[in-house]
Length: 318
Image (tube, rainbow, N blue to C red):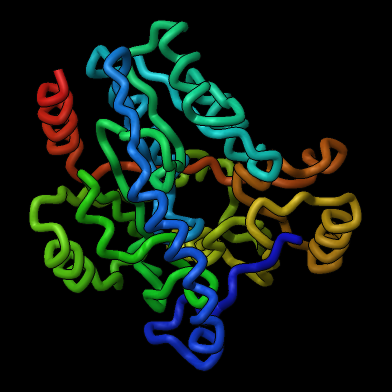
């Protein structure tokens, strides 16, 4: 069963429900400890980079992976994006496949072997920081600056796969920002207290197909993503008039009934419908002409700094 992320996960402090579930975090903690003790393999035939997260969902891993893919190509490196195959994550896999060279197999070791056979220079793994068997050459963790680490607790008490102090093992942070109200100084200080040497890169989200929309019209929006708030805030930032928001669990498999109800609601309110590109890929084909989606682009605020960082890491590996 796919469930929506509990709202109490994103409270600034744990509440009653978080403390009630706290004993169950021991299973995640034990798994993480075991994972840290397993010897990991580093590959010499190909370079590996991972774009992952500690916070579950909605941190911008997939667009960041594509950003790095395009940046590495500009640096005359031959990269491939990759994702371990999951039936419930076909939307992200399709997005990567449509916008890059892409490999998806049942485990990441097989992906590495395939990429070596295909003579790529580097693999960009979308997700996988918690992988037990591979020692990546470069490790990035993604965060949404609005959510940061939520209540700071592990699943199921909070939204974290690992404790925040594990960023001491990572090379860089991508910090997705939409609203200027984000408490960036607080987040920067938190990160640097744990890992003074880690590099932090801020990213902005832009709407590539903004000219397609008339912002004077009313819109009903829907999404089944890890952080639907970021989708709504992006639209508000761009002056869209939202009359209703409908949310579903992350990676939700839309049925005809779901979309029919949304279309009926839009018709009765004389409104247009917008969803995310990931959600659009999960909509039954017969409804797609009645629904629009946002094409987003992620922009790095200091691209030259990121290029220099990547070059320094790659030179250190060679």
